[in-house]
Image 1 (cartoon, rainbow, N blue to C red):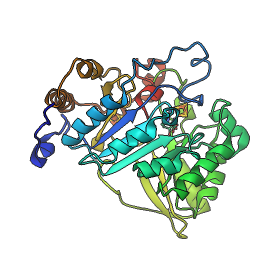
Image 2: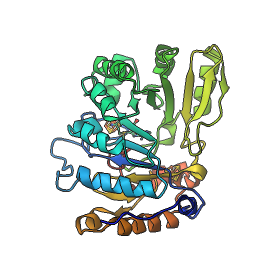
Image 3: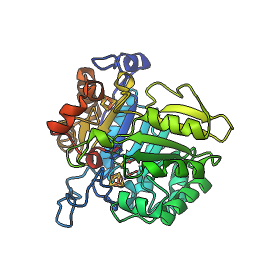
Image 4: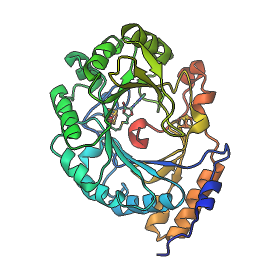
Length: 349
Ligand code: SAM
Ligand code: SF4
Ligand code: SF4
């Protein structure tokens, strides 16, 4: 296979229709999960008979590696492995080992619910994983149970966080999806727990991803309300962005106890700087979290497309990209007439 010849000036030219560069590739390894978070994979929909992708339908690690390698030649420098639950893939360390040394990749991260993290954190770090983002919605046992669909074990998740810290998979980000009336009353306790640990908690507005999570605007707690509550308890000051395309608004605690982030996709969209492409487990490339369709890469991959052909497909997709769902979202319309959007567990968070 021939390697595509790209120069940095060509990268600079690869901008989408709204002048946004391609920097991040999020790779969903599989659509299965050991949790049933109601805001993502409600158990009523994802029951025992639900047909998840078969192994043959999923991209192999070789195929994932090929897409990542070609994407890196087009300017992608950040890779995130996600799912479904990526730690259900037992061969993950081997994939990490290969992705970590790809030329052009300077950030390799994993998003996980951390239930299965403790035993493999050191192996993943040794393989070259840089850092982890851990989803943890509450430290209240009962609320955590509800938000994991009755499947999570809080102590196991906390052990996973401790193991990731020990293995140096830092800075650790803790993602909290906030739902009004479900876990919003436990947010300050969770922040208290992680203040001073170096872990960065990010409070995420409940999003209308997919069509199966019963999203309603009333359940969204606007980041500004959370910021007010935090500020009243522990005064905070805004921090600048770490890099272009960063989605969280960052604040630091004035008492020096660390950093907190707010991800306000609903009330303060950040489409203008969105530089992310998403590869689903079946090899479909999506250019927006709220996409209704994507481009199949699995067929060309399995039909022997070489790197140049694959690069041409990726370029074509990116050059045409004009997505800005969150900027155009009308909550009343989103709830009443949902589009047929891809589900979060398929596209990866
Ligand atoms: N299973 C892994 C985990 O939960 O970390 C990785 C996949 S999960 C789809 C990635 C992220 O998406 C998680 O942090 C999760 O909380 C977030 N997420 C899922 N559904 C969401 C929704 N409706 N609104 C906001 N965030 C959501
Ligand atoms: Fe699974 Fe993550 Fe979705 Fe929860 S958010 S159901 S852990 S994929
Ligand atoms: Fe990016 Fe789509 Fe989210 Fe806008 S709505 S920030 S384009 S993923």
